[in-house]
Amino acid sequence: MVNQYPHIIKLDISVQQDAVLDVLGNWVVPEIDPQIIEIPCRYEKNQAGKVIPSADGGQIVYTGIAYMPLGYPDISVGKAFEIYDPEKVIISSEAKDFRRGQLNARLWV
Image (cartoon, rainbow, N blue to C red):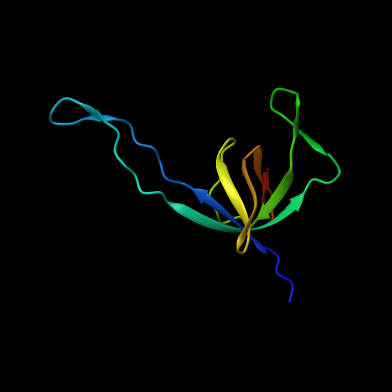
């Protein structure tokens, strides 16, 4: 049987909170527990040297594309993540672009 999404994206979606004053008047940044989600995906390397257009009219050179199902949150540009081939890390990078289509979502790495 063919597995449409054989890889896994691990992404930290925890939200950084602002510093608050404690009872002594000191600024304290609250500690947060990381919230790691795992998104099934299919990662394909950019072997042809393709580029995508950027918002300012330039071109973005990317390493590969990860295709994933639609039912997951958007990944903002610049967000760090890792893609695994079940047990080993394939790539550790930042998002260069993210777009939703009719059938899937695409993340440019």
